[in-house]
Length: 340
Image 1 (cartoon, rainbow, N blue to C red):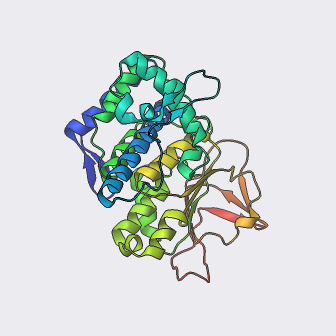
Image 2 (image 1 turned 135 degrees about the horizontal axis):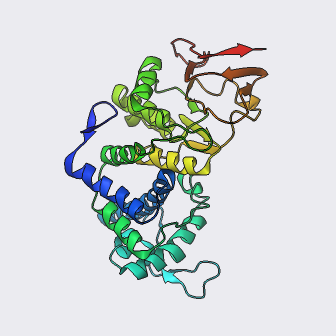
Image 3 (image 1 turned 90 degrees about the horizontal axis):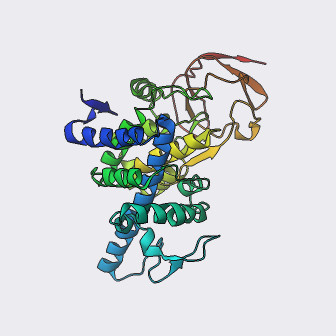
């Protein structure tokens, strides 16, 4: 059965089989928790993306004769993690190099050098900061080699394919987490996004973002319906750095959600740790023009406190809040009720 994504894009045949094979390798290798599998795959995809970014920068520098703006892996220098007596050249930490190593050597490089390297980069961007506590949980060199080989065989050269592959992986998270996380069905997300029709000047928030499915769908809607939002410099800056905010209190979901946004081409969204149901966020009053959310259904906290009002959440909700500074339109639609 083809797997349908977003607005009619499908993953079929050989590509689907390759993704399934990677997933099955984790299960047969002893990692059976879907969220843990997804987390480990997210780490590996992030490591692969760093190498791809450096390669693109090197190619651009070779064409233009200009130096690289951001050198991720400095040539001729060594990386020495804290607690180790011996460093390794930064080049050894690149996906394109360690993927050719024997399984035992790859396991040492990734576990002892690449992951500490991620920790050091953790303060440099929205996406990198979620790697602060990243740990390699893959138990054996053989499983790591299978995972690296499997991901390397999946073609992910363009943004659409990267996003579709990750969405298909996320579809395998079929059960709720211990904190009540549910992966909202994609057709429900698409319907809600179509109903509220995000605009290029919106400021969009999901206070219980999980895998960032609502934010990804909103971004894809804007790409499809408002292409000028990506070509006009000012609008593009807003799209990549100011439009999207997502909050969750589960660090694993933050990592997964941030990677989902990155693979869908949103460069620097706000994806941060926050318990939106328990904390007073009055300072966020009127900060957003559009809220898209499917609140969690677990725990004892049942109300959001915002600007002196308590909002008791009952079911999935989509709310467009009027903002006099933004020419937005649409229904204010809360499935729930206001008190106070």
